[in-house]
Length: 307
Image (cartoon, helix red, strand yellow):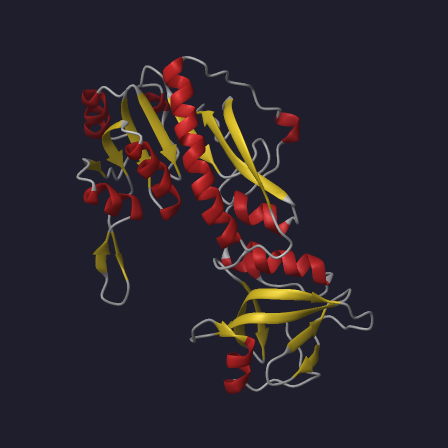
């Protein structure tokens, strides 16, 4: 089976690695164009491109997916199957090209959390379970017939980064099993129930500001759902502070945003209901650090206000 693999971030690497380990023929890898990054603005490769080059796989990096030259390159490859893991929205002329079609790996249990940030929103909403879905592409994003799903629990303190890594590995197995079912003719696509759709839109910086007037549990979920990226934030005396890890503290007299306790290694802040202990934090312009490290170089006192 001739496979074209499309993906960009680290999340996609275990999937392509697993396919190669099981000796599938990946005839080309499609990924995002190189971009200048860092202070020196040197061109950097996507994680998928770096992996593909290590394995000496042909790499295509189209600026425009509608480009006739790119589409012609795909046609000349004569793929039996296209697999998409964390890439861009494909035009119809591409996803209908292979004889077995094109399937996508999505980091949620569709139709729940359709959109760009499914892992973040599952944790922000306090879900206790998530998973991955493979599905055949259709014109409307994340709506195609489901091929298979796999599930994992979400612990009370799990961050988006931790769940991302777990789903990346779970997704690799789902991609492999989906290919095996397509190859053997045992695949049984099932339509999604659109009545159960939950949106998972892209998250921007302004969306990440903490509302201290919310209950502690909701803020805790918000912080871990945005950790490590793009990161929940608050301000103290007009300085931006990012929070990466918190824990719940029972305190029925807490006031929203008020520092209730500040010692050499402990910072507890009130919310609308109960309080939060801040465990990992980052001051504007500094590196991420434990609360003890942070308090050694930053002045905070009980009674101060976070906004």
